[in-house]
Length: 88
Image 1 (spheres, one colour):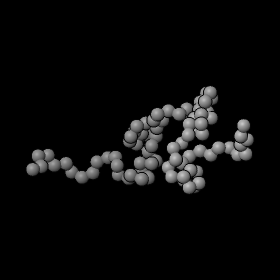
Image 2 (cartoon, one colour):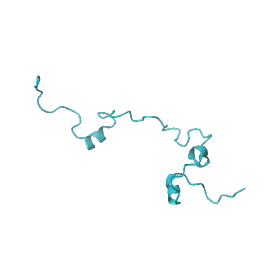
Image 3 (cartoon, helix red, strand yellow):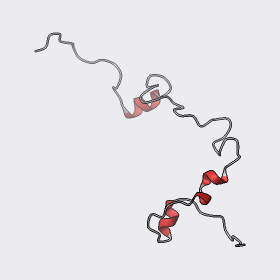
Image 4 (cartoon, helix red, strand yellow):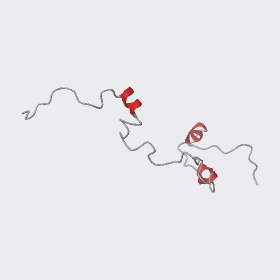
């Protein structure tokens, strides 16, 4: 059998650095193979890997994402100016 002197390297960047042209990832080198049998798959038990932990889209703009909205999107909430009904 072959003796490995180093851990296998993952990812397409390593393949490109070796001069390979878009070599497909072999299944035995994938991280998911290494993590088989582990309970939380490297994501941690406490802060679980959920689909949308902060909410979908623009949710939380007036609540838990307020700092981001105030900092990068000032004036996003609220009204300004005078309304004009029946504007033709």
